[in-house]
Each structure stands twice: as C-alpha cells, then as structure tokens.
Image (cartoon, rainbow, N blue to C red; front, side, top):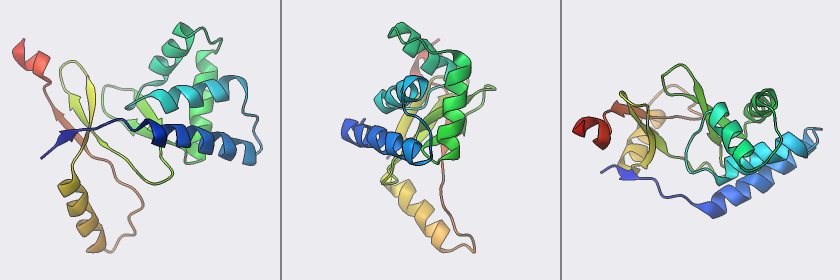
Length: 155
C-alpha cells in the first residue's frame, strides 16, 4: 500500500545543523544565502525547484538572488547534502539528503505537475532485495510514479 509521506521535522532540523557543519568543514562560510537556502530546504516536506525556493525566500523577506540560490544548491549537491531530482517538465527539484538515509519517493501528475511524496515499506524491501541480488553496489535509489492527481482526473 502506498501511503502519503509524513513530514518529520526533527529529521530536517537535524539535517540543517548537519548541513551547516558540512559546509563549514568544507571551507565555506555559512552565512547569507547559504544559511537561507539550508533553512528553507530544512522546512520543506518535499522537493522544490530553485525558483520555488527563491520565491519563498523573497516572500520571507530574505534578500537572496536567484543565481545565489543555484550556486548554493550546486554546492549542497556536490557535498551530498541535497538530492537533485529530475521529475520531468524540464526543471530540476531539490530536497535534503538526510544523514540517516531516510527518504521518500514521488508521485507526479502528468497534467498539472503536482508532486506528492509517498512511502511504501514493501517497495523498499523489494528494492533492497533487488540490490542484494544484483552485481551492483547500489548506493541510492529513487522512484517516481507518474499519473493524474485527483483534481486533474475530476476535470
């Protein structure tokens, strides 16, 4: 059974502290745009585009440029702190890569582009079994299911 993903704020708060430590230990300052983007990512429940992150920061009164948001996201991806997802539609989305490996997968509406997170323990067990039975050393996975959301089906 696929169930909607429940947001775990503690895990994301821990991620923010972890991310700020990693950025500092990599020799980067953690003020300004870096801190703003990390705090924004920590508060989200699912992946967002760079534009959505930028828009939220501006709505919150943060003075951050869109180019800075992209640079910070690129840095966080390179440090393994953020996962970059291509869910279709021509743009990437970003979400924290939690230190304990906790994660969710995504349902994407092919009509309106809505993205919803989901978890499925049975799917995780199947993926782990496939990894064990392969000749690959699997380090990560992501699953994207595409379909029509309730609103688009009703229209």
